[in-house]
Length: 325
Figure 1 (cartoon, rainbow, N blue to C red):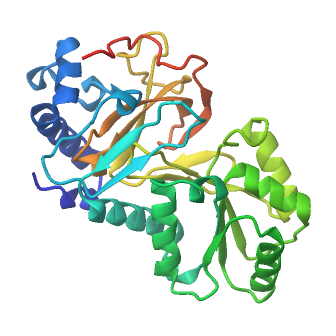
Figure 2 (figure 1 turned 45 degrees about the horizontal axis):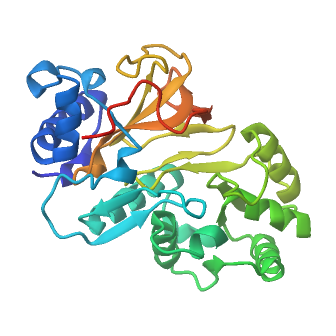
Figure 3 (figure 1 turned 90 degrees about the horizontal axis):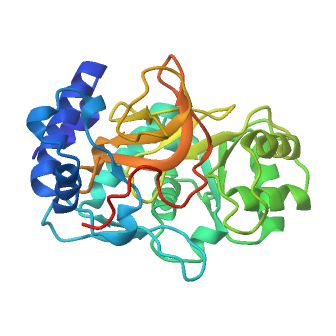
């Protein structure tokens, strides 16, 4: 199936048609997804709109090899997890597809990566193998072509000095970090940044008490001296990201879309701004599954942007007990 044209999608009509094409392709070539659809008695002949497409519970990535291609696997991305927990595995058949997705997605939200010095504070990700986030940020660091771009593990002093020097010199800086590490940084120093974007990737990863976004962003805004905290919304099971330039409101690239499902009836899609489960359509995920029901709760705004408001309390998505295929 031709898939590079997904990055040329210009409007909702083109997205709808391409999504239906991808659904039919994955129904035929993804045995896990096909079995899930069969259990729901959903066939491509029954599906006329995107809202009718079945969304695979994200927990399947913990128990099955979710692939739509017989191509050789080029990389296996794994989710972070506590010791002994089952992690998700994403079998990536074409890394160039992922690279195209995150490069174009970043450019659409922030402009050319060459305009930035990219600093990364991702200790919990660097300390393990298989992180799709580290893979993406490493490529962004290299693509920035700036000698000061790079990763920092736990040398907060060196990062603080570098951050202040770069910001004072007027260079555009992107500091992307996991939430607990960014909090550690501002506890060790105080900043008043004028030319720097602070982007949190979420998660305390068991290092700190979880807190609501408003509380986290207020602390980070004060500590870094910036008016807004940016965010990245992505996950191991996806090949695309959404970005927020403040207030936790995310926008997606044209080949990615969020739908909201009824938390009590996962096969029902809300048509208004109610809070419910986040369903993600990621057309870059052509060789895996492009239709994923996440464990996040959120809502969609009238302009198509979305907010994440929390996660389901239970470990499995309510109402989707079709886990044993």
